[in-house]
Image (cartoon, rainbow, N blue to C red; front, side):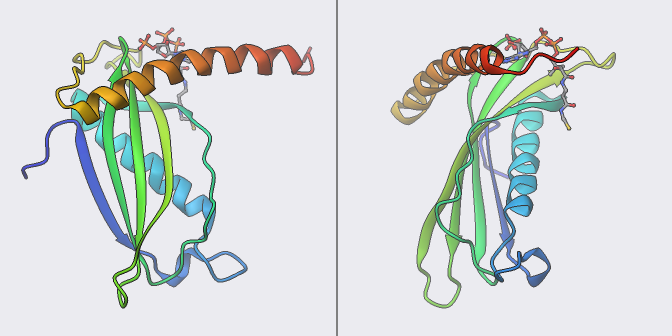
Length: 161
Ligand SMILES: CC(C)(COP(=O)(O)OP(=O)(O)OC[C@H]1O[C@@H](n2cnc3c(N)ncnc32)[C@H](O)[C@@H]1OP(=O)(O)O)[C@@H](O)C(=O)NCCC(=O)NCCS
């Protein structure tokens, strides 16, 4: 396989077992696949098991249809010490017309774990193309935004006793 260590692609046929009540693909199935592909991408990069720490905003602006091919393009955008941001772009393809639609993009943060189930450092990711540089800078900004958002959520959270 020639894919670089920080990238991964998965293509699946959207079969009728994945439908919602409107006959389109169920959002929960797509979320599960996003998590799976992010796991595969991050763990292959780190050579470690990883756990999902967070999934950034996922917005489904268009339905995905049964019978379409769904391709998940995943890449490591950024590494902290033990965390890895994986970006996933989702493309739906109509097999008959060949029409391609960009149906979703999202960012998942995965944390590499050691044998004692503690976070462990991962190889540092250094961007080597202008595209990777752009994604890396975006990931640094998102890391900051996540912290700010968490603080804001905590401020409005109803206290639990
Ligand atoms: C992920 C987990 C191991 C982190 O544990 P922790 O005690 O916070 O560990 P650390 O403080 O060493 O943090 C590990 C990394 O997570 C990041 N992190 C932890 N909490 C965070 C938060 N609230 N927001 C953003 N990043 C966070 C840290 O910045 C660190 O990243 P870095 O090493 O790249 O700087 C722990 O939260 C966990 O086990 N979560 C459950 C994961 C899981 O089961 N997922 C599936 C759910 S069904």
